[in-house]
Length: 84
Image (cartoon, rainbow, N blue to C red; front, side):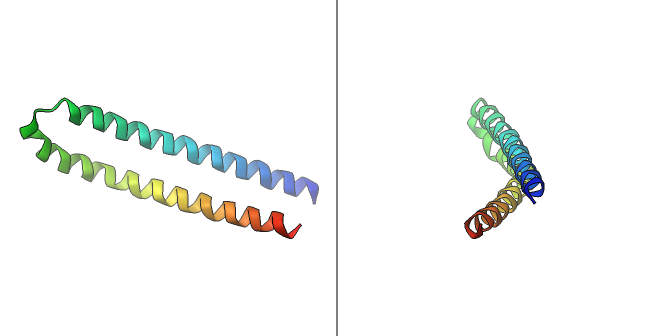
C-alpha cells in the first residue's frame, strides 16, 4: 500500500509540474501578444485584437480545463489525506 501511495504522490507531482509548465507557456503567449499589441499603431489595434482573441480562445479553454482537472485531483488527494 505504501508503494501505491508513493506512486500516486509521484504521479500527482508530475501532473502539477506538467500543468504549471503548460500554464507558464500560456502566460508567455499572453505576454508576447501584449508586447506585440503595444507596438501597433492605434488604428490597427482593433482589427488585430479580434484576430488575437480568436487565436487565444482555444488556449484559454485548455488552460481552464487544466486548472479544473488539477483542482479536482487536489481535492481528491486532500480528502484521501484527511481520511488516513
